Amino acid sequence: MSHTNISLEQAEIISWFDNTYKTRGEWYLRPVKAYYIFLELLEAKGEHQLLDVACGLGRLLEAAKEYGCGLTGIDISSVAVEKAKAKLPTATIQVANAEELPFKDESFDLITCLGSLERMINLDKVLYELHRVGASGAKYCFLVRNSETATWNLKKLLGIDNKKGHQGAKTLGAWRAIFEDNSFKVRTILPDQYPLHKRKKWSSLGIGKVDYKQVVEDSKPLSFANEFLFILEKA
Image (cartoon, rainbow, N blue to C red; front, side, top):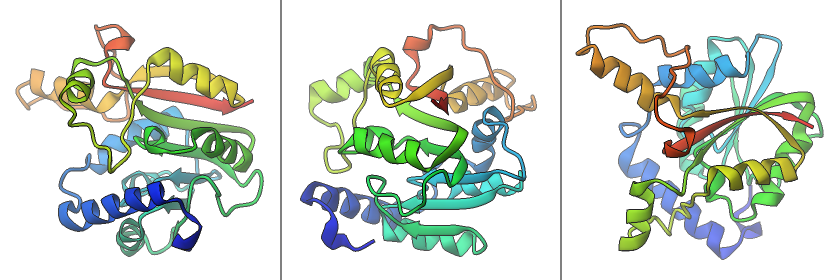
């Protein structure tokens, strides 16, 4: 993707992510096993073509290798793409803008976008593109931030939210309405599973075995989740 066809705001986001991936590497990311749950909920199989949008360093694609899917990833950061391609030389990974996906209509059976939709500038355009490249009956997995948590509200109050990385958040109802308005059928909504898997591990004093492919129920209402995990289908 040529950086001549992006907005100034997108250029700032690219710069922030390039610098983040250069300086922080992988240490702050979830382990690969934490991505299994997304693939389980999507019922990923070897015959599926998978697209991970905003793939970052390719952790989801690493996990998907074990399912035998055809692997494709895009990211707006050339640094992220270079690092992801080094780890996954057989996958198709390229620099691209989610607002203009470089793929034909109905190319993918499974599409994921984890922790990134809230950073998109023109979300309706991105969702149009994600819908366009999904095959008939395609399944989607989106992980999105909740704007009603105490942590998020404190950051906003103190003015320490990440403006350069265009970090945002919305309520559960707002996210659901946005997806349905953009021709997606909501099938399942769960709290982000990684914090629950970690809690289960801690509660056993690190002795118990955690199955990262299994859903963990939360005693708290869904609206309390830091992030929402949506499973959708192409309407």
